Length: 262
Image (cartoon, rainbow, N blue to C red; front, side, top):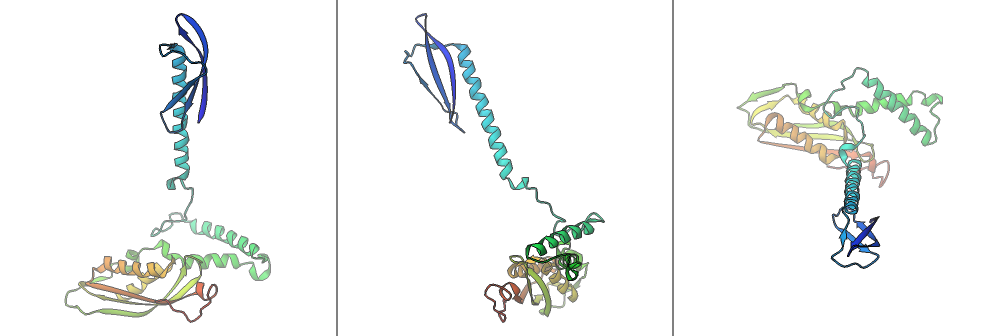
């Protein structure tokens, strides 16, 4: 609590009696407690000038409390984050030189990483490694600048007579685990039952590439491919199975080379 002391005079029976009143303001509350150093009868009248001073102090403190709360809310609000992204998911870069800017930032970051692990980024074998790594990572995450509608490219056709299941098996995928940024690779099997529409077979593979070339978990990758096909052709049913090996549990951790996730 914040204490404010206001010194004033209380008049009783036309005789001034000096006294001190302590006003206690509680944060976030309009309650005010007062205690007097000298006991005075209830009939005592506080001068209007002193009362106005006390009220002003209370108003100023409440206003200051509101400002502190607003500042605190702003600092913890997600919308106040200063994080900047190179581009939004599904949107291409708007500036021609943005690719060069990203390469420069990522190259610099890789040089720092090399130093942190005890390497010399200036030695012959590593001179161009940071730039190569930056280009490779941009390719492996190129799905962020694409959406399924861009790769389907209107390759959806009417096929009212076809009601049998369509299956595309063993589509290679290469993605990166979002938890460790290590690769996971494998194959995808996709099947759907048409409901008046079919999609170009190569577009199924391209949809898989769009979502696999992002930081992923296998569970979400499976769901995203299903959702993209449902939105594109509204089939009677669609199924997606992914079989993959995760290097985050092969090269590190439990180190189980033969383990497959389905």
